[in-house]
Image (cartoon, rainbow, N blue to C red; front, side, top):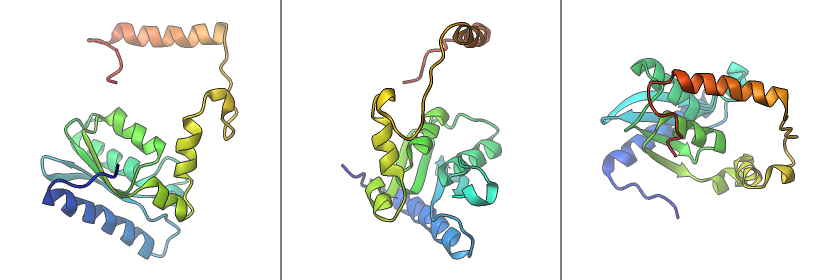
Length: 171
């Protein structure tokens, strides 16, 4: 079911995110037309546009760039209580980044089906990630067992031992 903004400020910030995407497209570069904002306490604390090509960084999507900007401005990677506004439904990577950041709300305009109709592979990625590992075709996944796994688990355990509180997932 599509999300319908409940308040005027949702529409206002969503329009700003769409304006970011339009400016990104109109600047003559090869950027993809995506824009995003992070809003906390009614204030824009992060802004981003898709910068994959310019940054030579496949993770430089608009949402990730907005999260990075907010983190730099606020001096934290946890953005609990914040809303991310995006011109388009975030891809799986960006959606997961919202979870990692503790984003409380996500408001977007175009959805993954709109993006697919205009040549973006997000829908395919969502479908692919829903498959069991052995059935995925985009990436050859290899889970290594034995000493390498034991060593990696040892590092995770050492990290968990250094934490001052529970290390359970927030999900």
